[in-house]
Image (cartoon, rainbow, N blue to C red):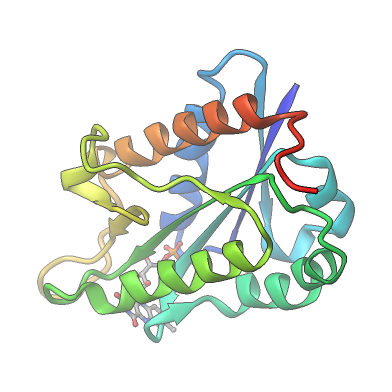
Length: 186
Ligand SMILES: Cc1cc2nc3c(=O)[nH]c(=O)nc-3n(C[C@H](O)[C@H](O)[C@H](O)COP(=O)(O)O)c2cc1C
């Protein structure tokens, strides 16, 4: 079985919805399973035993949620020190308010996560612009859910904003399945 580990933080449910949608997409690929875990509950063994690591975060002050960053700095850093998860698959997604055309820091947030994914030696799966749902909730870095209304009040994510997350999960699972057991490094 190919295992996709989805690690996230969420206060108001938008990132959690996206995590569930990614998992749904993973399960569409034969022999692939998804495990969804809150960032504070993930241990090194979980990283070592997965075939793909997907990080999801709300945009907080233009950057990564502190719980996801703590997971990266405490658990992932141990794997980084020993090159323990090099060559697995990595991907990201995020939800933000969507203030203004610049996206309130969402691109920077996803790029910061992808920087960490690259540090770990993971093979990055992006979100191609032709992915269904991309226009409603997509950036080339990964799915981006805009959870607030124009007056900045939180409204959550609509179903059309979850389509790209679902397809992201399928892309990730396909890549992880193709690479499982390969020895492209070392
Ligand atoms: C402390 C805090 C800081 C935030 N900072 C930003 C921000 O800089 N840019 C942005 O677009 N949204 C920002 N937001 C909005 C959240 O990113 C948005 O509501 C997101 O969908 C929350 O995800 P969740 O429902 O999974 O908790 C912030 C929210 C909180 C609570």
